[in-house]
Image (cartoon, rainbow, N blue to C red; front, side, top):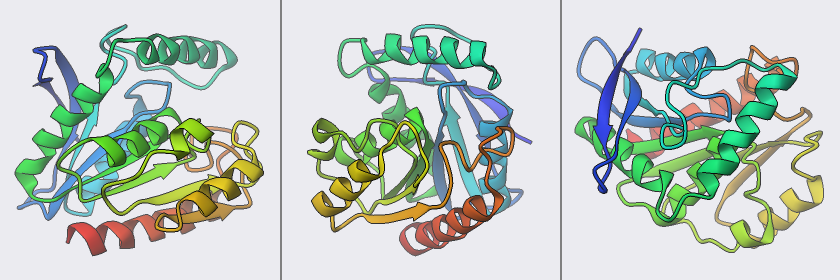
Amino acid sequence: MGNYVELKAVDGFVFPAYVAGPAGRPRAGIVAVQEIFGVNSHIRSVADGYAAQGYLAVAPATFHRVKPGVDIGYSPEDMNAGTALKAAVELLPAPGVMADLQAAIGHAAQAGKVGMVGFCWGGLLTWRAACNLDGLAAAVPYYGGGMTTPDEAARRPKVPVMAHFGDNDRWIPPESIEAFRKAHPEVEVHVYPAGHGFNCDQRGSYDEPAARAAGERTNAFFAQHLG
C-alpha cells in the first residue's frame, strides 16, 4: 500500500501523487499515468504492483489542474465525466499537465533511472513524455488514445518505447496502428486480440491473456532499460 504526497511543478502548481515503494532500496522509478478515470483503485493497484517488483512507483493526479480528487469508475456516466475532464486538460496552455509529469519524473528519479507507463489517455501522455520530457529511460504506452493520429505519430521519441494495442479497439483503428508502426520502426509495437482497456481487470474489456502477455513484455522491457 502506498500513500499520497504533494509534488510541485516548475510553475509552482502543487498536485497530489500516489506513491508506493518497496520495503528495501528501490531498483529504479516508475511513473504510472492514469486513464480518464483519475488515480482510481486500478491505477493505485498498478503502482502497488510495480512497488512489489522493487520499483518506486509514482502515479500523479493529472486531472488536478482542472478538478481535484478525481477517482471514478467505468460506468457510461463516468466515461462521459472523464472525457470532459480530459478535454479540459488538453485545452490548458502549454506546458499544462506535462509540467506535472516532469515533476513526477523528478520525484521518481530519487530511485535512479525512471520509466513511464500509461493507459488510454495516460498512454498518449506517456508517448508525449517520451518525445518531449527529460529524465526518462524508457516508456510504455498502453492503448494510447490518439497517439496513432498523424500529428502525434510525427513526434520522435528520445528514449526506447514499447507500445501495446488491441486489434479490436474501437478508438484506435488497426490501420492507424500499422501506420504508426511503419513511421516508428524504432518503437516495439505489440498488438493483441483484444479491445480498448484490456489491461484493466475492473473493466468489461479486460482480457487476461493479453494483459498477462503485455505485462510480461513490459516487465522485461523495464528490467532491460532501468535495471
